[in-house]
Image 1 (tube, rainbow, N blue to C red):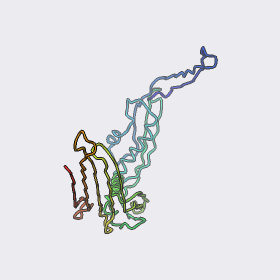
Image 2 (image 1 turned 120 degrees about the horizontal axis):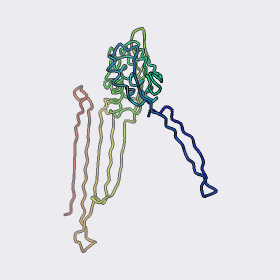
Image 3 (image 1 turned 90 degrees about the horizontal axis):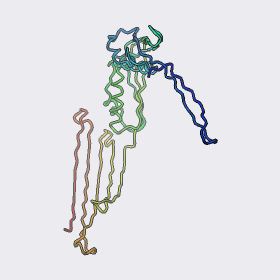
Image 4 (image 1 turned 45 degrees about the horizontal axis):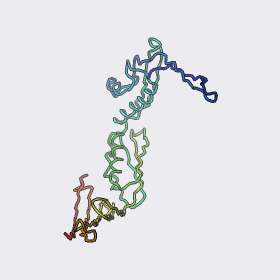
Length: 280
């Protein structure tokens, strides 16, 4: 919060209880420091005004030493959106022009601009490599953008086919490219869910489901779902022995195509069956 000269110490004070002591923490806050000026060096790709808007260190703001590492990350993120992998050093000088003023300086080495080179793939299991590649938003020759890589990883997780995804990059300075390596670990393709419950709406409820995430090795999602509800009601409010039984059974078969017509457009076909047995 800008109190760079703050100090604290503790003292012990006696109490009426001879076996107890009172601990007092004494804080000397001092005066509050502020950011007097912010300077950027080595910036050519961006207008300085655009970069300064993204910084936490702003003139007139209370100075926090944590501004420096956080702003370094902000600058790196902005540059990586344009294909650069910069090296930034941050520093602060106190006493410019007076003791409570802090001058902040960021020295940026922008480096070279990179494009996407090769995209290699490593996977364990039976999933086709093409299923992963079609989810990628980056391709060889594209400008290297960090956000596009993060979105690609999220798209891969959204398929439900993979339990772990890693993307690493190696710089080829001679060609001005960054080669990517995509590593994936597959999830189990089949699953089974069984459930039983009871509540105010149904006396008993049984549910079951079976599914497969990679039918025909094309990432088709198939599932079979069933539900059986059993309830009973009194025929007469004064007679507990006579009851009416209600039974409802439902079943469905579903098939989901995540890439309909070659586009990332989900299509679903379902068959549904329901049978109700009601003594009323």
